[in-house]
Length: 332
Image 1: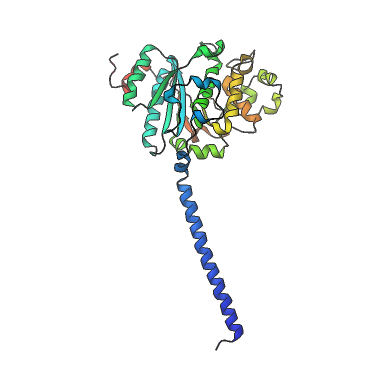
Image 2: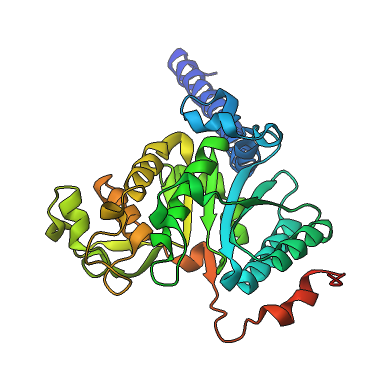
């Protein structure tokens, strides 16, 4: 027979075993729940689409001019925007084809909005783009950039290229019209599939903004006139890496203030392109973005290849030879 002390010890052992058993069940359930949440994280993130511009608190007065057909962000996961003039026509055709191919393999819950700004495409190019829409299932919307709304120095010419102020203006317009996840991509930049699939997580990790690093540093590619304009000491930033002007990701709900400051500078030539600056010592839009990101205690240190691929078509891109690849009917 078991004595009283023995029964007491057995009771304690049974209690400990039961507690351990129920604890294991609880932990197992918790781990399974977290695993499912992680597995569905992208789906959940994209289902919580950015609000329509109608409900945004940061709408500017210019938003009244937005067309009725494009006021809402409903139905789209994020916005990708690019721009091209006639001298980048061939790059644009490659870019459209690449985006189309990627979208075909994205999960069906991811639906990007594609906006292409016309910076000076000729009549022939516009006809081709309109005809191509059918082939690409209305993949993109083509818009004419209204240079007349902005400073004269934004106008394109072969020497300054408008100091790339128009790029900042386009990003500003998109941030107002379609607040939420926003990507700027040059036509020579092919965004990676994984970057689009994981966009909510990427922007969450980087607190609403990411741009890969580009060669050189601020000492090489930010003109001293920028620091003079902002009344700052440029020597503090000489070794900081540059952001990449060809690819930027924003969550405007977190970093609209960054776009606003960039835009405010771009409106003034002495800020975005100070006296004495040129393409050999300054990177215009890229330099200002890098400076603003740096003083906001951020860094552009992600590798480009983790987000996109860059292609240079200067030697092998001939628009006249590419036309037949992108439309089925070229009888213009």
